[in-house]
Length: 317
Image (cartoon, rainbow, N blue to C red; front, top):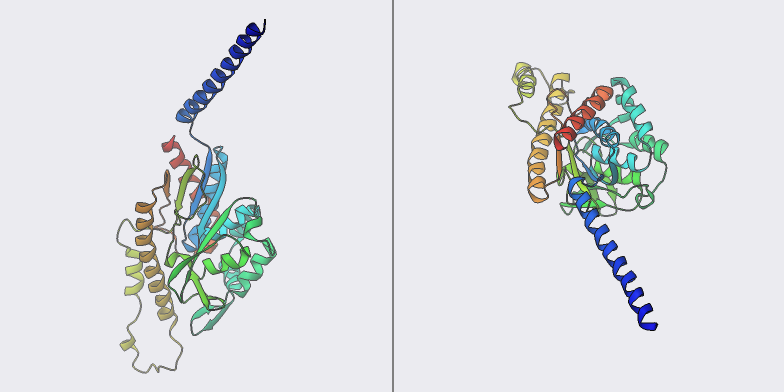
């Protein structure tokens, strides 16, 4: 009698093992034909062009993907950080209503020897939207990159005050005042790592998706050339004193040169990041018609980012 019970129980146990094995194989098969919908998202820097990240995220979510972690640099840190904080609607409203006048008011220009704006009004805006939330308390794991001018190294913020981390990550050299933290001075993360593919928190089954809005040039920048050629030479005005304020055209050219240098630096860094950590899906949003400071084109850039991501996801399958 006891032998019969033993063999009966053994048969049930064996059947259970077989069912577990079959379920594992079935799950493995499903994953082969239906890849994970979980996404580890990486958002590049790119100034105003980063508004397109909002549209890219809209597209991902609309196609049924779930963003489980985010890493961003500069404007990618702004969009990624506010999405992780559940404040995307507030950011979208700002982007869509932005005008040149509002942009100038938000930047609050206050020139100094190492900056054009001290960024205090940016901090006030961030405080109004997200308050004093810490990165470790966000709804989604998030990190952002900045560059320490003293050591010359990348600094990755995974904890601490979110708005301060974002402010450090967006500090374009010579435009924003660097963020001081003891003996460290932080500037834009794009100086060191504009597409932080190697920094995002990622589970083994997550799709690694990178969105680049930095405007990598696929052809010579004729717009930049035209802007430079239209600027009068210093010798055209022999009466100009070194103590006079520079002409608007010259100031504009200063911004153009600074923007172009950043663009080339970012392009080289993006190529390096792609080689070291290839993403599962790379979405390059062409930016020939948009500039680093076109913050008043928010609605257009959001639509553009969404359309570009839609097309990329259709090709990806």
